[in-house]
Length: 219
Image (cartoon, rainbow, N blue to C red; front, side, top):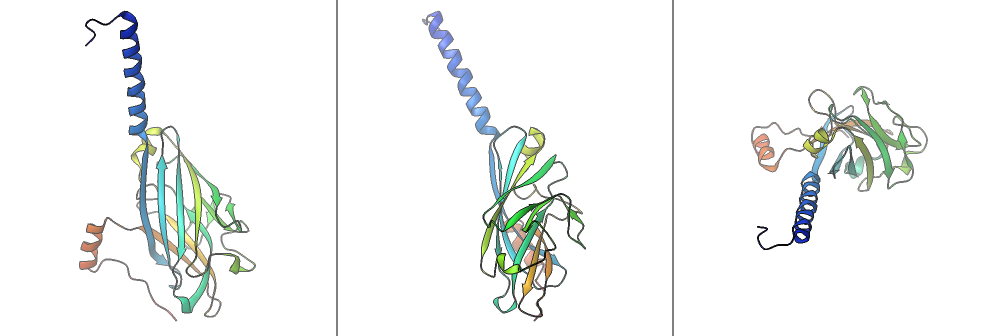
């Protein structure tokens, strides 16, 4: 490869190859994935949401999660999303609330208590509260959306191995819980936990087997 090259030329070639290798390694460490989370449990059976989660990791010991949350409760039931809390995969070192597009939502100090579903690691709520008080109409009404950003920390090996479907709690824990208040029927309130939708092929198989959870309708 280096035949008929001067010493200076060889050094330049080696330097360029080293730089290219570093750029390739950085590119290989970057990851970006998306997943959809939907209700898989509820205290009252009224509230419903759809959460589009984006997981981003660019190397090092930090990553980010962005959740765009849409209130798709039935219009006749009304109700506002007033809080969101998440728990990361147990292998993640830590999580903190970043920014929300709806400025009425503030970060909630850990742990975020969401009975009967236990404690969550980080969250946002109107006035910085999960259970809430005051006027819920400052939250996300039916058909509306808001985006919530979280920062994660952990080892590079762990963060690189995660994706949008696995970055939140797996197994016996709950990935996320969404708080609803101010419902049109008797001023109902609800706490709804969310799970990641499986890949389309797996979802079709679950549906055929009758295992896809169906939302309980109450009026």
